[in-house]
Length: 77
Image (cartoon, rainbow, N blue to C red; front, side, top):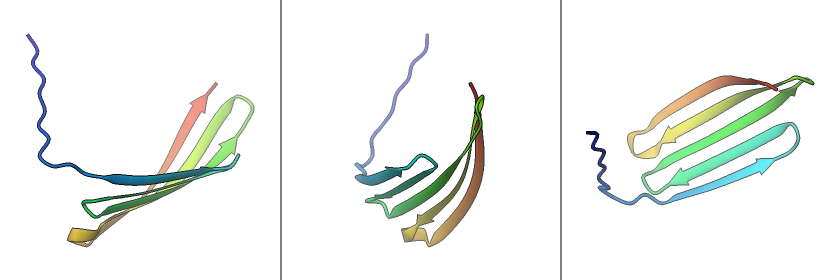
């Protein structure tokens, strides 16, 4: 037997925006807990593969913590 449960302790409102072109994607979000995030993604293309590299920033305002990340994704089609 498998039992799964969850509890909602508080509601968090999130405002997000995403903008696309053929080569770029920009995402931004902010929530009511003070978490602010942004991502800039660049498509790198080929005929049989789709590559993307992204840089993201995350700011947790109440704790004054900042994180910066970089990622590469690939899909072969």
